[in-house]
Image (cartoon, rainbow, N blue to C red; front, side):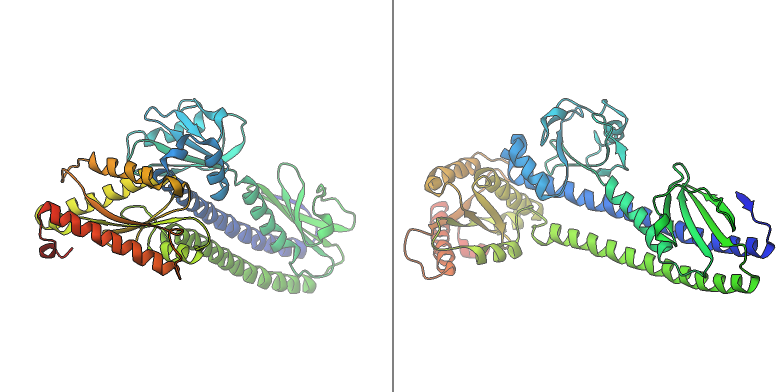
Length: 436
């Protein structure tokens, strides 16, 4: 749509060319924003899955509001919800939302499709939430055991708004123009100037009726783009202006899209790396990399316990029942460790069937903690195997004067292998025949 307030044919031609150039850049910025939103969704899905794994590893925090608020802060989300099989929020970081369900509002109804689809993970567009009509983005996933859904809520509105404004400001305010020419980008609803080659106009209300100037403006989506020129500008000056601004806009557009895509890719890859680099894919325990990092942080002057654990009979299960049975045993062992130890320390899978637990809380109660682990292991029955056995060795950092952290882990390994030897002697199995 054109609204011409200009009698000079050359000025009109020049202005329309410049309008086309500016609008082309705005369109590319809108496309960049769409890619940015997609990147945000990918990022939020990573966050909700990470929170789900954290809670699976420490199931006692599922109803601990203070701990969930700490996790929310750590993962840079505003809220965490746990949703049951009926689609109702039963726990989370903010109690006032308890009892809301997928039937409580349009933004919640979007997630009904996950109720019976265990493979689905969703992230919603920016939508007003049901309680305060506050614009939010929500992501949701199933937990590992498919017993409940984990949902996070985040408010990205400010970030998106700043991104859009910065794009307009950067593209327009730094634009080189010939003396006597100005370019404006105006909010179509409020008529506020969002970007201008003369920065002093930004934030003012646009009127397009300055004496001695000729205007052409065009509405494009949410914006009005306007070019104004002094009536005294001649055709030759107009051609120079077109060349200057055209070259600038072409370069600015290409550079902006390139830089934004690069930043978004680096941000997503960084988040993805943080999520995957410290987690064992099969068991969702911490992996060898995380173990090596945390071992460097241990201090022999503080009280902690090192537990070295190893499954018994894994190769026999693999050979006689198949690798699915072996994977089941490894995952079950990990889950039993999480149940018994997660409240007191960290659990690492450092090899095929080798685990380490670092206990840094309630070390004085280590015997009762181990007893709970033994009971959990003893009571288990699975799909492929009827039982599971785990040998372990425990060392407290305070039980003697160790010369290094390695001495603690070495002694724990020795005690674990002694326990393993006793298991094979009692069971009557020839350990060597299974390369254990």
